[in-house]
Length: 502
Image 1: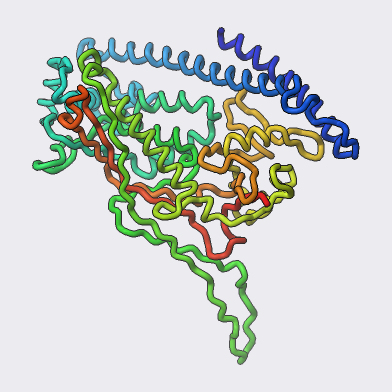
Image 2 (image 1 turned 120 degrees about the vertical axis):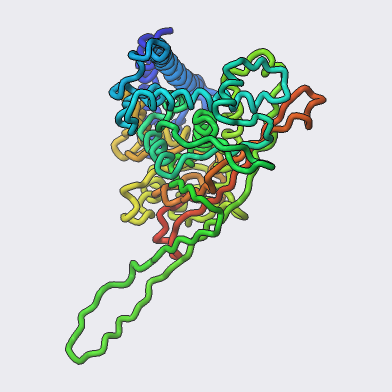
């Protein structure tokens, strides 16, 4: 199907879903009016209308995913044409080398001049270095395998004075500002379209790479500046598989020393009058809590790559390894940042109960409004919701007092969907039921959760002999991190509140 055909089908499905929803609301109003014989779904959960509702929503989700895939393919085709054009220009005569007003192939929309490059030769050297770093990484990853290294791989190692026999590399992570810039772009996009952003960032870059290349970790000490694509594949996969981490404020520190962040709670204190010759008695002190961040070491586990993959083709092997390691860290960080209690502190156990649901086993519009207003007005301007996908399925059936759905889809304009006018994030690590004592929804300023990454690097280790009997080379990643919710002592002043079921 074409993009136009899918959009047409989505429009038709949206109309049918809206009609079913309208009928559901009418039956619900009859039942709330006292007619208990009216079934919300004729025939119950196994009735034809309920099944139709499930099938229509399933088909709608499938088509939206397919639409995003086709749009992503179209963007990749356009990028391939752009890269091909640049390759043709870069291999032409010296007079046709990049001009300072040409766009960086690794950073669309930014020229060489914008990036601070002052000559064509420097511009060419920057692009060549990026190619060399990728070839060096491929040579290192394939060390001890039957991979067919080319003269270009050997020449790149010689130009960069890189020894591929070392066993461990250090990937320099993005700094706080660059990582935050990616988070901001993600927040403004519909989740179905974020894959296109990830591909854009993986194929491109954030800035020209000009740092010097040193040795490897081990007996020689030092670091190698790995290709930007490796770092991006690891860090973007962490966000993609830990969506909550895209909302948390990320801080990258150079060391793992304990870091304290004081939080003051002075909401009950105010100024007072002073009268002549009258002693001032207003000596109230603010309440402080020192929130601590430490450094907890984590490892990804072995990513085992068959030798035949290196033998046949190891093109983009750096993206494969980086993405798999990043996914594992992303899942672990998301789990700990949500529910962790022993080391990395979770946002759910650190957040107070701001609203108790009206009834067990269900959720209502009044529950959502009550939860929203349990958040201090100072934080409500940045309020968003967070819940499991199961909870979203139930929330999509809720309406306000004017029978308008609380959930609004904005995929047509590429913006995030909203609930009750607020953005939300799906977090599969949260409770997926409305059972007693479950905390199904969190609301508030999620950026109050601080995710600390200890840098400057994430280490990658290669193990050739350990799994030789299985004809595999293993890679393992090491990263240090911590997380905690920045909150004052009093529950009422906490920037995030949760909905709990009785």
